[in-house]
Amino acid sequence: MHLARLLSRFSENGCTTVVLGKEACNFVREASASCSAHLVYEHGAAVWELLKGRTLAGVAALDRVYTRNLDWGAIFRDPYQPLFVDVGSGNGLFILKMAQLYEHLNFLGLEINKKLVDRSLACIQEMELMNG
Image 1 (cartoon, helix red, strand yellow):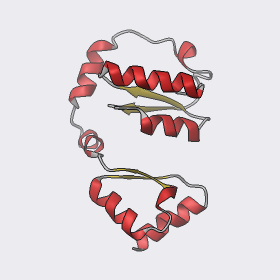
Image 2 (cartoon, helix red, strand yellow):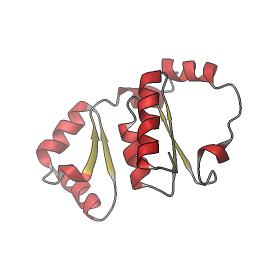
Image 3 (cartoon, rainbow, N blue to C red):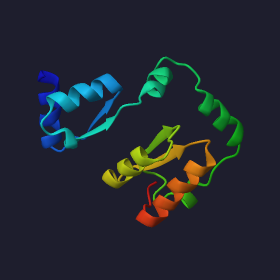
Image 4 (tube, rainbow, N blue to C red):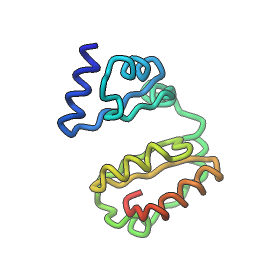
């Protein structure tokens, strides 16, 4: 309970809190009155695998696909802003929301499912994001 109250206080002071994992998300939802102030994602298993130093299948596949240098100036309005990379970005909802919240950062989602990539790109154009 103390942790949930602490997270709520951070959120009230303008800090964005991200909660990963089903049990952690359930705990925060039950204990926090201002759950909407948190970004809550139940499926965080890939994050833990990456932190353990394991090579994720999606990362290995992307390494094989993106073998050339990219023109970052053609992708981002300001290519010198810090870059946040979401590996296995799926439907892109997380990274799109982050790009809306943090215009001073650049966001790059890497996904091997072409349908999901196409949907995310359409959303980026519709939302007129210049940092994602």
